[in-house]
Image (cartoon, rainbow over all chains, first blue to last red):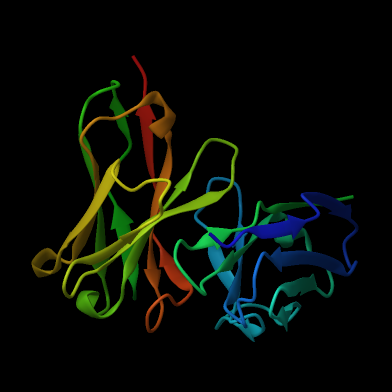
Length: 107
Length: 120
């Protein structure tokens, strides 16, 4: 199985701050990496697919980069509505696997 | 509008059987694979397995293989996840999700989730 190591597990930042989350795969997954946002009590929502593509309708303050084993997810200017848990997920091979999640809070 | 609508919450006893459903609408159901994802209380996301509704071909995570079964009835655009013998450790929220493209594409649409509680 491909292990996905996501960090940090939680962070606290101020409105307007730049927020960065990293995800490392245990083997080369090319660009088969997606990022999801999950708000409390809701289903996850895809924000970034194939490492750097913004899903339709998602605000441009969200972005992703990376390839191979190392990936980064960025919120350029944190907004109050971005309070959520974020997960990376590899879709290079089955079993599909997720990172452990990053809980983002407002300072 | 694409929608995945899941069946309601269930409360079961250990050893009982259960089938939960996920009805797709607003798109050609046979064209996109459906996966199931588990989220235990306060925990992260775990992929259970996927099905191709066109031919019912499946893949399972080794962690779930043999304990759950996924199936689909394309005539009523519905996918299912079932257990023959539930355990207390199956208590979780279960989501169905559509692969939004060819093969193992990202999950572009999700069901609202089905909460399964297994308790004696």
